[in-house]
Image (cartoon, rainbow, N blue to C red; front, top):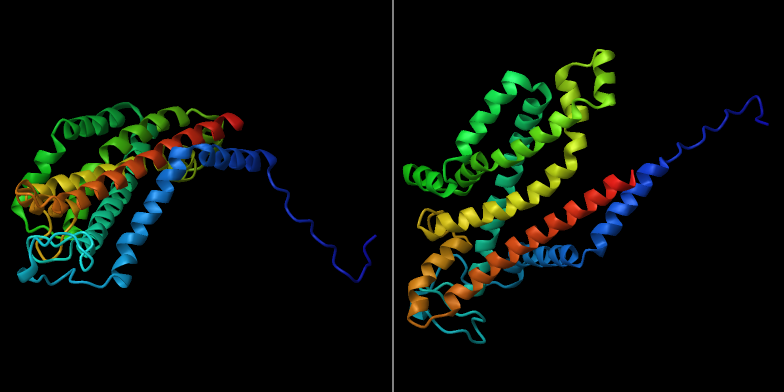
Length: 300
């Protein structure tokens, strides 16, 4: 019995057992996927390698020494020296920063725009949905690499500009996926209840349609990062990347190709392996998240 001069203690809010169970099943399913866990470990290593590596491994990553160009791997230069006299290992770290920054930023921006676009299209449906999806279909019919080359040839490439260009090509797929989710979610009971109580369409889209499509959004975003990194590598390989002394893995691969044919193999294996590991890691994480979200949905 509470004393009259003391306030009654408010009991702590009870946790939703269904929500806790579904979250536990999500993380359990993800952690049991060995490829997904390996992808997280590889990605963590690559991030540390690219962003903390240059702090520890201080070499000529920015200003080259032409006198030691194309030097083979040794104790002083573990992965050798490139054609411009840059330490290949240090250059690999700096190049990874640009590749990851452009890939992740472009994927995030493209996914955000695609989510909003697809949610609006799927929620309203009808003529507006048909018109908006025809825009997406028309854009998807244009080869992304060709459009990238045309845009890059018209302007001087830079990291911010590449982010804008790649993100402008990255929103089509998430828009279609979220649109499909929106067509299904707009008929659910909680959406109908929100309409009855007077909620406006923007509020329903933001608080009901998009949050309930988060599984599809997150999984697709990981694949978008991998696709963006490959697109940047393609563009740089064709000579439309950021100008020196800035670089990325694709530019390193392009620069070392001619010399690799002459026997300087160390100029292409580093950036080639880095691109493959990063793309595969993001794909493994995406597949693990997809499976985990499916398990979570079944446990609700």
